[in-house]
Amino acid sequence: MSSGAESFASHDVVLIDRMVGLDREQARLEAELAATIVEFLDLRMSEPVDAVAAGKGRVLAGEFAVDEVAAALGWSTHRVQARVRLVRRLRSALPRTWAVWKAGEVDGYKASKMVEAADRLTKPESVTILDSEAAQRIVEQTATQLQRWLNRRVGQLEPDRAEQRHRRVHADRKVVSGLDLDGMGWLWMAAGAADIAAIDQHLTGLAQGLGAEDPRTMDQRRADLAVDLLAGRQEGASTGGSGTAVGVVVPVQSLFGVDDTPGELADRSASIPAALARQIAARPDTLFYRLLTDERGSLLDVTQLGRFPSDMLGLAVDVRDGTCRWSTCSTAATRCDCDHTIPAPTGPTTAANLGNGCRRHHRAKTHAGFTLDQPEPGMFVWQTPTGHRYTVEPDPLPTGTWPAPVLYDQHTPITELIDLVDDTGPPPDHTTIHDALQPHAASDPLLAPEIELIASG
Image (cartoon, rainbow, N blue to C red; front, side, top):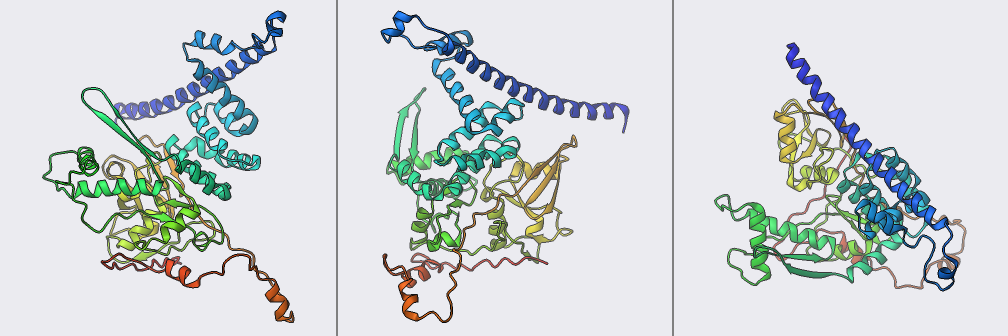
């Protein structure tokens, strides 16, 4: 390599490292500013006020301190109040998150996501666990990835509250519309996560079915189709086909009602309360695929012959990965390429050598000097052209817990064992449970084989 090329290569590394340093310094200064604002408010609140005004209830200590800060910084009063609340909440309940913000490892926006998640929890010990578990994740993940993990983890920490929260927010479901500039308008909908995912996939399927000769972009097709469907204009917006598949991963214990561990959408974008997952399972058009994991929720490996993964193997890899495996990408696995980490035919067609990459990051690996290793199934290590390395850990699938077995003395009289049976509720309906775990289809039967995932030894 010539000296000029070496100098160029060295300079790009320096620029990346400089960006990282500047970003950390900006975040550190942001935290320092927030702490200074709180210090100023505390100072104002400690100062004595005019005795006459205070006696008449006209002014409180530090009442207008936020207005002073707002005027000095050119912020709104609401923004100052929100920043003060953020710092106080972090200091009192999320000390690890506050520490990484002060160190400049994360910014205030990510810290605010932690506070939003903590506010949804009801037990102080749950907040402590969340703060501890997120200490490293908050540094490594984007805000979108962090938000998805927080949504799932809140449900897992307090599964008994997940259904209550879902019922409360589901009561606020609505559709809102408004007019915008230049003859445009917008439509906003709040509904169940599984239903929104089904709508999104249905629109995409219809848009793709219009064919390559359609000159519109995918976004334009989806928008036009949504308008046609909702306005009752069916031309060019046929709803025929076999329907929309939305993947929901739920522990078998939650399906049986043994516990209430929440399920997840297959792309990890949302948590699904156990009660809602059971409702989805009871629908007559629900298809079941059995996925075998270890006790930590890691999907076990499967290998097959041939270059292209079968639908079953592809489904298993999609569920394991959830999204594109580039460190900051949140593109759903269903919209990615199932790529061989070690290219075929050298690399085998196995879950340990397959991973999801959106078209952009698949091209980066193939043509732009990015390298990718998969040292363990589902763990990916990227190296960029500058030599910087980024590790992407797999997100375990949700796992439930079976109740501890109750052991009885073999000589215990049968009449005493009968007395131990809880007969306060209705007897379990074995037929209902059995039927719920069988593959179902609508009027047009579909083949739904189980996935038997066996660790390759």
